[in-house]
Length: 234
Ligand code: BJW
Image 1 (cartoon, rainbow, N blue to C red):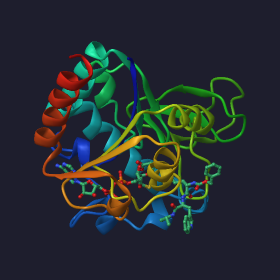
Image 2: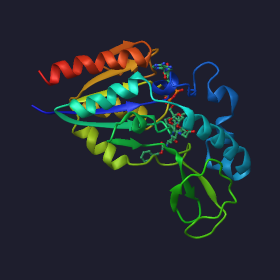
Image 3: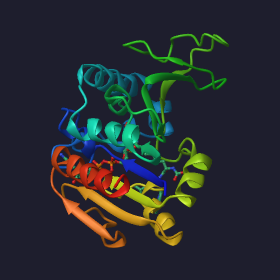
Image 4: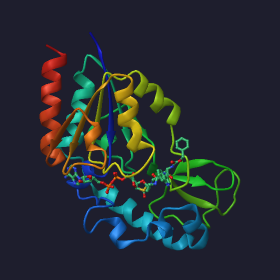
């Protein structure tokens, strides 16, 4: 019997690749005000500050290498008798760098530029500024192609369809503080999927999972993948 697995990942899976999380001690939100750098209103007030924040993160992400957790998920996708979809909240490209093929970036991607005037998308240069003209309409309204608070996350229809068909839902390295991702476990549980959390510490929604395994992602994810491959392919 084939298995449909949906995996939600958050900043914790990339922490051991050297990319900062948001809400952990010393994380990005301890250094920057959310309303300044992660809302459309903040971008309208001070686009230079927002571009500076994302240009620095784009440079860090370009240097970062996938870790054992990213590689384990790519291996699971390649070997699984079934389908695996990674829904990531992360704007880095470490899942793709590790070899994962079926990845949705619900909060966008650092490697993307978006024209706030016409919606055209293109590959982000290393350093962006609002004044960079859009290649399609020439408007000087360039922004990072990421989803800020108050905006609608990407690919919601495909994500909801995948959750509705899931046999297993796994949440990795996310605090469960941000919606709609924080509600995916309830959706999966409602349709009868088995739910698993792999996190350093219990997330805000930990009690909603059937199984919780605590520890660094580079340990818990390869362990869970090995047990899943043994179970599903036996
Ligand atoms: C490790 C580890 C290791 C560490 N190994 N683990 C009131 C109630 C309910 C909802 C709302 C409300 N008021 C407003 C809302 C909605 C709002 C929201 O959720 N607000 C909350 C703050 C309450 N949400 C939105 O506005 C979203 N849009 C929306 O809802 O639209 C309506 C709609 C939805 C659907 C259909 C139709 C309409 C948009 C949210 C956009 C979030 N954007 C950001 C920035 C993206 C760009 C960027 O990267 O800069 O996304 S904010 C930030 O948070 C980023 C992340 O993707 C997101 C989640 O963070 P994440 O990944 O969980 O990181 P952390 O730091 O929180 O947690 C790290 C975890 O890892 C921790 O648990 C650690 O323990 C663990 N960890 N090291 C394993 N080594």
